[in-house]
Image 1 (spheres, rainbow, N blue to C red):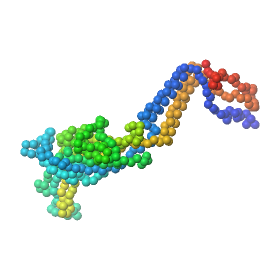
Image 2: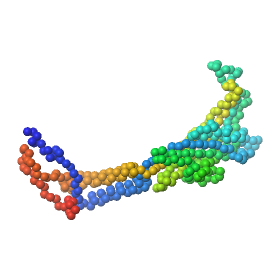
Image 3: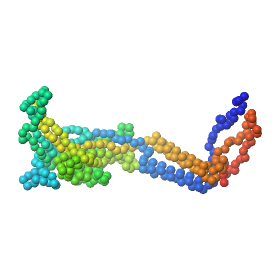
Length: 384
């Protein structure tokens, strides 16, 4: 029968690991070098630097902000127009008005942004010939001599209060800014030393920053510097956009019980910002228009919070074991494929069991057991 000619032992052979001791310093040094490099990588990079034994989550949160006018106002400001002051820092001066925080901040409440008015162009408008808005051609027109263009006085010294909360629900972490230390960084990532009335990262106190301090943190000299969208106008005149990154961390040391946050303000290049605010009077036919220019700050909460996790640590350990296996495989390939002694090494590494079996139909001779290899005291095969 055909089945009698099938070598069932070969068809269903079992491959097992065999330890062969190759006395070749080239392979030994190469293997030890690979193993040492992998162990150093696991300890230094994976564990010490990347902290891959931690479960990591980006925090979420909420922000509350408010604005406050300075208690003491300045009477003489260089950007405010008077009989002898027509230009300042290369830009025309304008009439100034002393607005409080309620007028300067618009809209009154916004969770993730803050708009601070620096210049206003105001005008009174009414419908043409008191027409009705039910008519298709009814439009608004400016009342004669009603337009005014002015700066907000002392806006540079207005203070911004920032209260924020962060949470990492998966890790069971939640804190308010008043519970955490923190500090402000400049545009180069260096810590800034603040002077009163600026406060950041003091436990049990709200964070307070003047607009001047915010501009300096973003590497902007003042509101009277050239605008970023049109250099012929000042920032005070044109407005601008800033990002405020609030970054939380508890991985800056090897103790995850220590938390901190930082503020970083970054300019959005080639931008200006304005908001048009309509104020309706007796009816919709009469309105007051505030064309506001100013500084808009967009708050972004980010960072990295970590907590020890056994499964994450186990995955990191298994990945390291996999690298060690790859190192052994590479040395094996060099030994049996590349070295001059590859045939000898290959013959000793890959062997059949050589056990006697029942002769099959067509066999010309009986398979005898192979001559035993020379072994050391531990039972490992020695190749010279």
